[in-house]
Image (cartoon, rainbow, N blue to C red):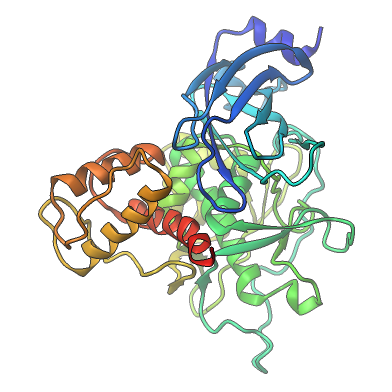
Length: 420
């Protein structure tokens, strides 16, 4: 019997899985997609068959997972997650298979799948998710200077820190010319890396510390145009020896997603240094790295009550602090700086209502509203439904996280509509 299958059959813990499917071409949801779920390695035994609704989403499923302690104790040698294979078909789209979706106990795995419109009669895209970096064997990070020398001659394009709309990821070692380049939204990239490099079961402050380190490292690559100045056509690689692990079509987790949505414009700074710090780290178990953060060490400190910034200063020094990017690319306008809610009015409410109505054209479960600049009960109900569809707390209020999620979805569905 497959070891993974036997392990899952014999344990009692559960994790959750929710699948969302959109079109690669339009960013619109894919309705009536069928997803067959099996244990990875046991393809003949169907566990669940589910389909997507008008928002391109499935119901939230409960699936067996190893005991949560496996992901909380660095001395544990057992695999802390179970693995599932998803076979997805939808009318008018190329079928896709994802092998190795990782389910951890007590958290919700979010599997976001982008399907290609059908262009050929045969063939299936197949993605195999490799082992998590804390469980598998990956090359350790080759040390670099955390602050890069800046050439003032003009070769560095950016004069200030900007959160990019997209990251171009080279899926391999930087000099591997056979590796593919992928475009991934910045927030999605960070969520993917964090889900690949730490366990989503860890305390929130440990997740925050690691997310901040990942974002600062990434924004250093963006700010210094590190690879482009070496003649490459990408922002960052997926090699752990050089950068971070990023995996095409891998699932992310709800606990990580919410932290990234709250912090995505942040990075780490030192006094009198303009560029984000290249915050390097290691696991602290298979590899040691004096002077850098260790992932298991961050978890242990969070268990002791340390905050994210206290964890980061413990490892990187007391002169490390959290900064905020001056610009966010690819959005119609920045968050107004205050929460929009029932009773609010003005141009920001009007802009948000207009964006919601465009989104509702793609997601019919979200009711359209009167775009009048007045935040009334109907707008509140529409916002609440938007939050439900996109996995946000259903407050009916447009806070920082909701504003930028509305902006992100609006840009995705309207950009294509403008081209048609």
